[in-house]
Length: 377
Image 1: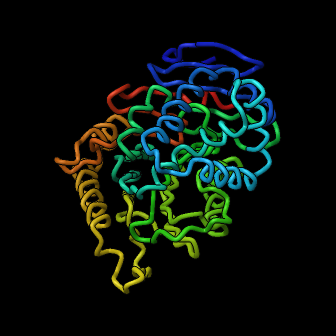
Image 2: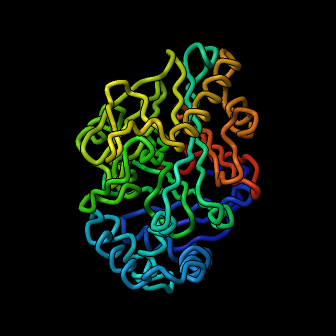
């Protein structure tokens, strides 16, 4: 059984492809190689389209980048993927008509613009308790990235993994063909949005670490509650500084991570948590190589502006925040104190207790509901 707003598109070897409005929803089942085969078979045309736009197109627009060297570096990253994700990509290679190298580039396409400049503009908010009037916790994120990524929204996909190895069922929001993600959910009623943390944490790269987006999915495959997610956060280091926001039905938590430390904080108020792209936990003392506080940078000032705007909106709607109100909050443009800006690619609103997810692909698809509980096994 699936909700009425899901239109079935196709089946392949036990996997199913749906559409919620114009958003693809891929439900994959079995072992990791089988799920990879399903992914490649169900979405071959969409994966090829994304590769042409985001990989071939990017190198065509940036002809000075050393493509062969970059592909070699991403292949090295693939060599330290956990085995289950390597098996998925190998399965995709068997059915997508694409080479393993091409699929590795698809999975890492989001990193390509970072080779030119960093971009930290995401926003996250969660409300519970008094802020929801006693209703269930609701959380949301705005994924802001380079302008060209909005052009790829025709391949935006909710990918549902139902592994048969005892791991949790997991859903991600990605472009077709990607495994690693910055927005992740699981059947243990956890939701996560991960942001760039380099405005505060610096641009030092821990090259030997598992790629951040792959690590995000690993955490949720293995976490049955917030305590397990916390243990993973505190015992692993990211490749670059990040801000990981995790919610369960009771509360939300933010983990501010550099390549050498992780600090956890709760909400600004009891029942409201907001995060953008700068660190809030008060014991950080981060400086540039010149000895200047990272909080004096223009990127941090931009982040503080978005942060204050979301806090203000949270207070404005205190006692009334549910999924519908949270969608209204995310719809507010940056010029009016909200999180939506011209570079916003997609947004989500989630109610972890009910395994409900709403997705909006900016300038492409307005808010549409995906009932994750009906897609998880």
